[in-house]
Each structure stands twice: as structure tokens, then as C-alpha cells.
Length: 238
Image (cartoon, rainbow, N blue to C red):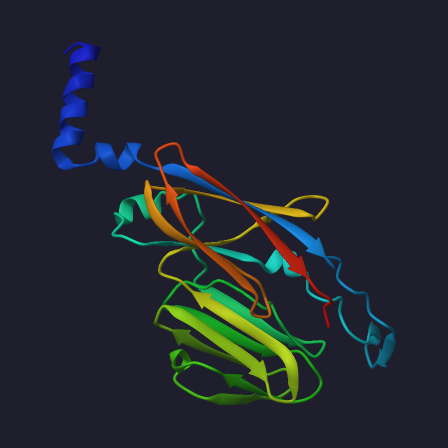
């Protein structure tokens, strides 16, 4: 069989089983986020003496630019094969949240639905962690110093956590069925980018920031792709 004849036979087979449109339909959806305002994490204010040495009173403030999450939500049925070929790494099946320096870190992790959430208390005092969702199957739990607890989160959605003794210490675990990713931050830190391959169609694009700030817009992606330019203003970090 000649190469041309083989090629045409292959194309016909792909068309017959419906794979050719799937392979050819993806288009780049590119989001560029420009950060304004306070972006640099604050430094520790002093040091404390511990049995194992001298440590900062608090770790540096978490960087909100590195925690930003971009979500892309199809507004119509999209073949799962195209979603799987989006160019994004699979969502992690385990995430660890640490109570550390009177904070709950990281503040906006991504976790695959059905994955395991690990809570660890690395502070010297016990804390009560409030779980603000039915996903976890319980309302709150107490973590002694050095204690580790883990549980499965079977449903898609999100789970908000806060520490009763430290109202500013909060985190939100995102368990999306749709596409979601942390952005890639530029070297100078004033811009972040995410590119996702999606089939042409209508989508809701949402930018999530730690602390509850968010932006969203419905967009139409054609076969040439779509580029969005967003602006996020950052305030002072605790």
C-alpha cells in the first residue's frame, strides 16, 4: 500500500470513529494577569528563641500572586478527551495544609475530587480547624501540636477552612471537575500567564485569589483561540 493510500485510509478511519474532530478542534485560551498594588511578601518583624535555635516570629507572608487560580468552565457539553488534552498537569491526589506561623498554608491549593487532604499542626499550640462545607463530613476538629489528620474529599466543589483561635488564618481547597490551574508568574512578578487548550465554544473564565477576591467573564473561543488580559489589585498582606 502506498503512503498516500495509507494516509487516506487512516483519515477515513478517524472520521468514521469520530476521532479526527477531537484531534483537530483544540484552540489556545490564554489568560494574562497584570498585578498592581502591594505584591512583595512582608518580612518577619523579629525572632524568638526556641529549644532548637532562633526562629523568625512569623514566616514571610504568603505571596498572593503565586496562589492565584484560573478556572475554565465549559458552558456546554465538551468531550472529555479534549478536556484531558488541555495541556495541564493532572490535579494532585493529595494536598497538605500546615498550621505554621499562625497561618494555614497554602491558602488556595488544588485537589482532585476523591483526593486526600492532610492537615498538620506545626505550631506550638493546639488549634481548632473549622470546616465550612459538608464535603468533609464533619464541622470542626482539634489538632494538637505536631498532630496530623487526613481524610478523603470525594465530591467536587470547594472546602473552606479557618482556625477558630486565629480568624485571619484561612484557606480554600478547590476540587474542580472543570479545568483549573495555578498561573506561571513572571520573573519580575508583575504578570502571570496560563494557557489552556480547549475546543471552540463558550466558557466562563474565573480568576480566584486567596482571601475571596475573584473575577469572571463569559468568553467565546473560536478555532483560532482567545487571549484575555486581566488586572488584579493586591492589598497589604497580614
